[in-house]
Length: 267
Image (cartoon, rainbow, N blue to C red; front, side, top):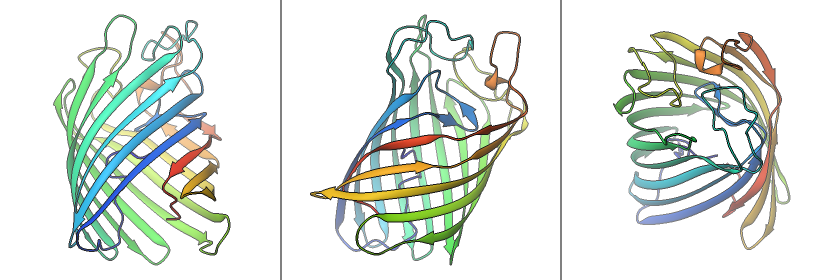
């Protein structure tokens, strides 16, 4: 699902453009900085609006995750416990500079985490640089805490695009990537429900290979399905499975995401 920087394209933007997007997906795995954030399968929804002028863009967006079943037996203390309902809300805004093959963005995000006893929140400023050359693309994102938590966070990523079918009919793409996380400053959550690594240093490394199918339904509405293996290496204590037990440092996931996106996109 789109998050800050995710909607940034490395193509040049034509003068005086505007666009809006709405997505609704079901997903088996909701992760944030290498941390699993869902106790059950979730429905994710987002909406964005973008205005562009001669390579410059301004984008605002909102995002939420809704757990459809109760989580009363959830043993991980950093996740939501209770009946069905939203687990997280996010609002963000960013400005971007685009040239063919390169995109730079600056912005801010506010996250609210829904929990039984209190609803903690965080605010962060972020900057991202993304480049693409042939089948390779890479990015580096930096987050600096403004409220709720402390410390800067760095997330580099590199992706190889095996193929993209640009023809009419269903669009098929396959990409393999590596992404990681580094806590640059001490991040000691002010509330136990706020995710994030304690201390500094390496937080996670993820190797994934994802196949995505996009099917044009009607009126620019598309059905998207994405799946593929993810190999996680985690140091983050927020991946705890129980109050006194932790998940293995290495774990294999195979998430599935399916939903609707409007308007149609093939990139």
